[in-house]
Amino acid sequence: MSEATRRLKWGVLGAARINRRFLPGLKAAYNAELVGIASRSAEKARQAADQWGAPVAYDSYEAMLADPQIEAVYIPLPNSLHIEWATKAAWAGKHVLAEKPLALQPEEIAPLEAVARQNNVNVMEAFMYRFHPQQARVRELLAADAIGQPRVIRGTFAFVMATDTPNIRSKPELGGGATWDVGCYPVNLSRWMFGKEPVSAYAQATLKNGVDFSVAAVLDFGEGCRAVLDYGLDYGRRSFYEIIGTKGTLSVENMWQEPGPPATIYLRDDKGLTTEELPPMNHFRLEAEAFSQAVLDGHPAPYPLSDSAANSRVCVAILESIREGKVVTV
Ligand SMILES: NC(=O)c1ccc[n+]([C@@H]2O[C@H](COP(=O)([O-])OP(=O)(O)OC[C@H]3O[C@@H](n4cnc5c(N)ncnc54)[C@H](OP(=O)(O)O)[C@@H]3O)[C@@H](O)[C@H]2O)c1
Image 1 (cartoon, rainbow, N blue to C red):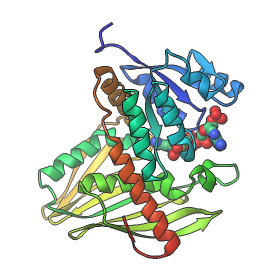
Image 2 (cartoon, rainbow, N blue to C red):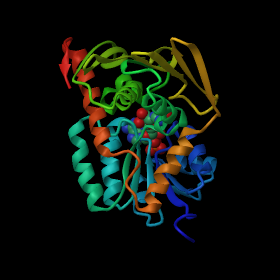
Image 3 (tube, rainbow, N blue to C red):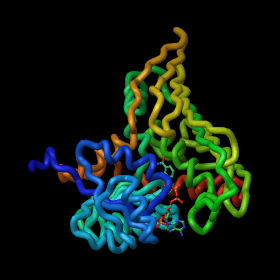
């Protein structure tokens, strides 16, 4: 079989809830094949493998990494475990797509990058929304000067997390909290769309059980450019960004939700409102396909680890600002 039509063989580390969103995308990808699911519990692994039609159930993460037929792993573990298992997987010669946030400290990225290089594998953080064509279209409109110079980016991501059952999001020791769970998305988006890094961060938060549950943050990108972000685990569902430029505004909804509704882009300028509707698209499938194709073609991952380090640095600055109650240099 030629590399062009070959399917990359994937395994999943953990019978996580997010699998119900990622795995339909992976299974629909033209160039990927789900081989197995690993869990700390043999029973959970078997159930998950049956549910998702994976031929192999592994009763430990180590067992999956030791299986030579697995070429790439998806890591949907608690946030605090991403770096550890991404590094172990890279040492085992597996390509790695790790859920966001890849690192809770930016300094953790360089050692992982060195291991990936040494073992000739791709490692990427799974910000799926970057693969949805609506973001590519927004970037096209920015490049075409549709709204002039971007000055303010407003981004929000929120939902009400059920608190009657245990959740990794409310555990500080597992990298819980709204900044790592939902805030990292609008942080990523604002850095991407401005095309530069913020110089400082200021944030206020509501804290519960030692983690940030809802946050309002301002990132100063210099030269009059700011991101104004709100995100939380304790208020109504929100998924929205707006880029306000010197001549107009672009707004987009639902970009970090489940695949589903058509994607609408709203452009408001002096001439009025123009809307563009893109067809429904599964960004998890597009992410799995782009990652798999890069591996199959021997190309670097679509987004570099330097981006993950930079995103982590900004999230750490937001959390420091919440703790210290002052503006923090990024
Ligand atoms: N891209 C997105 O849209 C999106 C959406 C939601 C979540 N996520 C990310 O996906 C990851 C998983 O989130 P989730 O909501 O799916 O979490 P979850 O249901 O709690 O799954 C995490 C899995 O990690 C494994 N695990 C290993 N050590 C653990 C420990 N000490 N405590 C708890 N679980 C442990 C468990 O699998 P086994 O018991 O099978 O070993 C568990 O099922 C997070 O990094 C989150 O940020 C991304």
